[in-house]
Structures are given as C-alpha cells and as structure tokens.
Length: 261
Image (cartoon, rainbow, N blue to C red):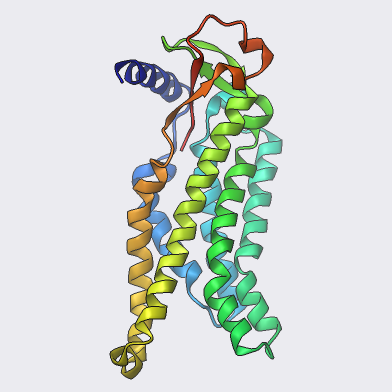
C-alpha cells in the first residue's frame, strides 16, 4: 500500500543513517563470498581438519554478516559492545565444531555401520545446517531482544524501543536463514539420491562430485532472494503485542519496525 511504502522509506532512510555496512557484508556480495564456502562445507571431507577449516570460514562470515545487517538501534552509539564481540566469537567457534560434527563422528567411530554412515554424510547435515544458521542469527543479534529496537508509527516517526519487536525481528530472520541453508543442504542430497539410481551415473561415478558442487551453488543462489524476502524487511506488529508503554499510543493498532537482513 501507499502508506506502507511511505513508512518503509522513512524507516530505511533513518536506518541507513544509523549504520554503514561494510562492503564485505552487503547483500550484493553475499552470494559470491558465501557460495564457495557453503559448497566446501557440505563436501564429505576425508579428514576432520578440512571440515573444521571450511566450517570456520563459513560460520565466521555468517556471524559477521548477521551482525553487520542487524537493527543497529539496539546498540548504543552504533558500537559493538564487549558482550556482543564475545557472542560473535563464541557463535563462530561453537558453530564451527557443530558443523563439522558429521565428519567427527565418521572419523572417531570408524566401525560405524553403513546405515549410520549414510545418515551422518547425507541426512545429518540438513537439519544441522538449518539449526546452525538460525542459532547464529539468534545469538549474534540477541541484543535486539535484550535492549529493544526502534518502532515507528504510520508517519515514520520513531516512538520508542521495543523488546517484543526485537524478538519478532530475530525470529523471522532466523527462520529465513534456516530455510536458506536447510534447503541448500537438502535439495542436492535428494538430487544425488535419485541420480545414483540411474545406470549412466552408476557407470560414471565420477560425475557425482561435480553435480553435487554445481547443484549446491545453484540452489543456494536461487534460495537467497527467497530467504531474504520470506518476511517483509519492514515488519508490522500490533500495538497489543508490545510492552505496556505502547498501549496508550494514539495509533491505528499497528506499528512498524526494521527487521534487518
């Protein structure tokens, strides 16, 4: 609607003035930087060290991207606090270890059965990728729920900070990121499972690796716009869902907030 567009323009103008995003973490370069890391992290590595290396690069970049594209109104003076820095480092470290868990299981338990090995290589990375992506958003951007983010009226005027709006923004972004990484891990696995039944692939098993890499990159690229637009960038929240301080406001029952990316 025209009203929503006007409010979005006002919120966008104020958000841009609050936070200048580093070129490395802008949405335009998210695909070329993260796609090779995603492909490399989903490869069934022969050892633990390569798995940890690629997971470290991927999870560190994702944590940085989530922090850079947060709602900066939750941060005092637009500066990263010591607590937030520790959370970013901790998230990257924990996600690195958890992301390499399938490879660690295969390496440490060499007598594992064929069914369990197939589960660790093919099925476990799907929910794990989705959960780690959501986990990174929720931890790195936790200050939005703790301190609140700025909410706006229908005229684009800032009327205060809301923890409820911050929690809603985090949950929506976490779900969108889980859909991105979960789908990227799931679709190539399903595709390879179907291709392995084909006689041509059975005669030429070397084709499996390039198909896995190419399909992962393509699915990831296709899912990025879907993920980023899964929830509106400028969300709406009912006044009744906010803190008591907002209940007495003279509004039409809806307020607006910037979700971040």
